[in-house]
Image (cartoon, rainbow, N blue to C red; front, side, top):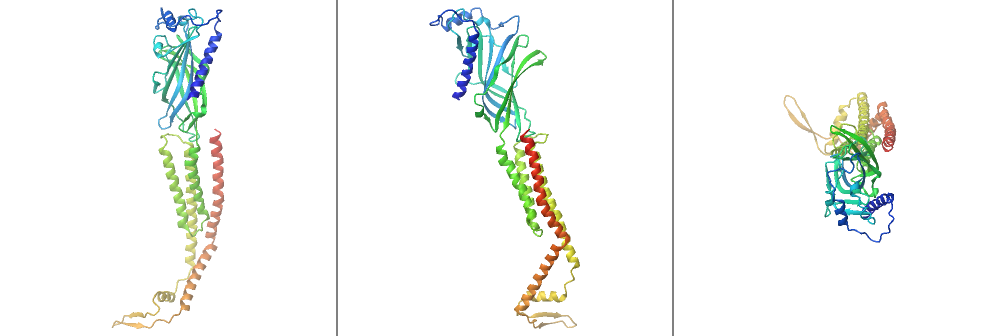
Length: 446
């Protein structure tokens, strides 16, 4: 803060030195001022009228400069900004010259109370929602009167104004906000305002950080604005802000990268593990959708496509494409199984009975119910079975399953699905890499 004040007053002193240096030098050698400030004010204000302009035959030339002290906020949701600035209006009023009364005094300084007694070009900010003069504790207004009649009027104000934002490149976007100055009371016929040399000053540009923005450039513009009441000179300070997108890389882009990469793991899982593959794809899609919802909630609704929209839609497309590939492979696997079962011979009744017997207790009796004219139930001794018998049955079923799996894996449908998985695991990352190169190159160099 002290550095800001030092630079501002250093600039003020330098300007005063230049103005004083251009004045005719006095031939007298002064040791002390002859008049007090009160005496000088009484002399110059004797016939002074604030309702009369300094010049009658030509417009009063007014120079304007501004210093950006801080930018507190730059809101995307409300399209507005808030900043603390100093701005000065400098003009010449020959009626206020006091060098003829006291050639040893170069300037006089006053507060805002004396400003109300002088004619002023009424330079103000016209594009703001509100402007307030800082009071700490008195109003931060500096009025400096030079000996040749030059008036330097400086305000320290807080500005809240609109800042129309274009989010097409969000979050790698640049935003431009404007400070617009006009002489509110006088048109081009009476007051001619212009920028001072080096009109915009930022003492420490690295210390100004509005939310997640930094100032990268600023430009001073002057043009004529046309109203029904006439023509007014307009001075515009254009300040360019660049968004710091490191936060969005960690909170938005990195999670979407992970979701897309997880969806590709399904290409490495065996075709027969369809539930696991489906879970990976669906979870990745749900995570990406949730992330996109969080992004939308923090941005205003706009009718155009943003850079983050392109990124999210592309990531969703990649995950959805992996699910489509999974559906196609599952369909091919189903066709392979159906073909295998169509060529399989029916299982004999003997095998069914053997399976039934195997599931029954070893020492139980087989109850057979025969239905004749006289129904009766008799116990039939169980078929003698040994441990070898059960082991043979289990080995037989295992052999049939292995045979079915082997035949399925050898089928052209299964081989086609495996080949498609291998190709997808190569093609998907390559296309995604190409998209990343185009995306980041375009938005980071724009």
